[in-house]
Image (cartoon, rainbow, N blue to C red; front, side, top):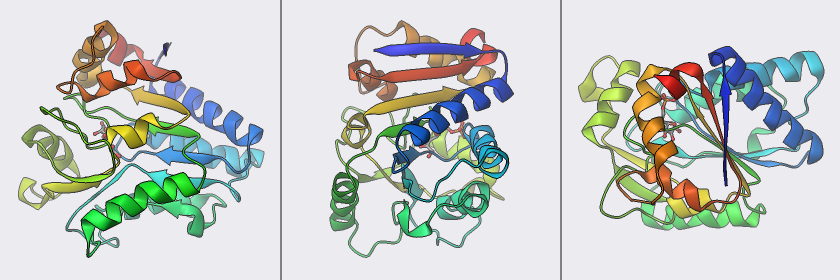
Length: 242
Ligand code: F6R
């Protein structure tokens, strides 16, 4: 079931999302939390940091799994998702870094590594709450629209539109990796609860498509969420109305 929440603006969306995360951590301090990178959840991370610093929200027993990472750039690279997560969240809360997992874009044996990542999620008890953004092309994590979608964590090629969208973080479009490692649709669908966030006018067309979808299609990877029993979509007015 998809529950739709529309907030006035990005700030409110971020606060509502952070509060849902807070509630889950308070219910279960050992929460296994699935995290996304990108611009969308930045405000939510900022609010989670505030909740930690000002209201004592405790991450010490929380485990996190990130959705994806570029292949071909080092963890220390400022554009890697490893770097991003430390910079935007992990360095500012009391999480045990040993409990944070991000796919390794440098793995020597990628195929084996992908299987290991899914197995590790399972060993930690599965993802309790997964945070998602959505691409303008309907991707979730880096599961791009295609004839087929991967079930488990996989190495994938990024589409031109994703490379272009992500080029805003790089000096030039040629520097954007063309390959990534990403949790598959199955890895995401196994999460007990999912929150998808979208803000801004640019996301309005894909959100409109998703909200009117009555069929699932690999051409709109986010439509797979129609099969999940506990999805909350949190939007701002701009993403909702355009
Ligand atoms: C990031 C991820 C992507 C983004 C999506 C939206 O870990 O999995 O699917 O959520 O590309 O990106 P932003 O938030 O930058 O618009």
